[in-house]
Image (cartoon, rainbow, N blue to C red; front, side, top):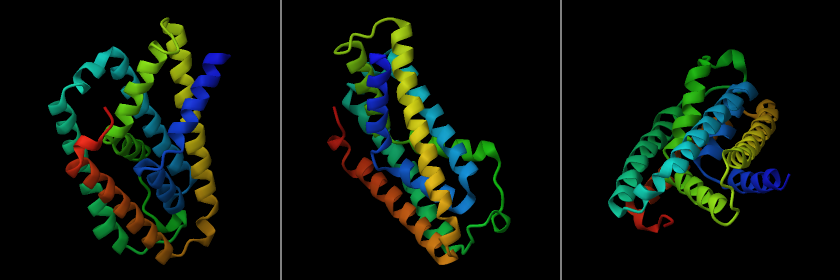
Amino acid sequence: MEIVINGVVSGIVLAFLIGPVFFTIIQTSIERGFSSGVLVAVGVSFSDACYIFFSYLGLVQFMEAEKFRHYLSYAGGIVLLLFGLYYLLIKSRKLVRAEGGHIRSRGWLSLVAKGFIINGLSPMVLFFWIATVGVATTQLAYHSNQQVFVFFASIVSTVFLTDVIKAKLADRLRLLMTPRVIQIMNMILGVVLVIFAGRLIFFPDNLPH
């Protein structure tokens, strides 16, 4: 039970870190509905699970190399910048209504991939999981596979549940969303992605060690 509680607490901390994923889920849910927001959250959770797996296998050894950290930061920043410019310069120019019939449907795979990519391109997420793996195996002394699985399953489940709640709350706002408001939301998401991209590209040394 203690392992689950520790996992839930860690999951809540991660879930309320405001970043590109937060705004992506909100924007997708408002524009395309609750189910689309949930699919993005599924992609985020799958990305988290991959990061946990690689972190547990010893990726932390590579992260200690400064060059590797910088290359990872630059690569993630460039792709996030492209996403941000798309939402800021292209997506924000399209006036759409928050009604399913007015928006071209997207396949479930593309929405899952959207969450996976946005979450996966943020080195901050990787650093969080590496740090959490370190805490779990040292301070919390979770050494057995069962303990590690329960701990990280609790974290990912908590993050997914909070993302679903975010998507539901955002979906409730759809009736209040005018095309202009949705346009502004796309602009906000674009600005957020560009800001995070700038931090990764121009200030890689400020990332946590």
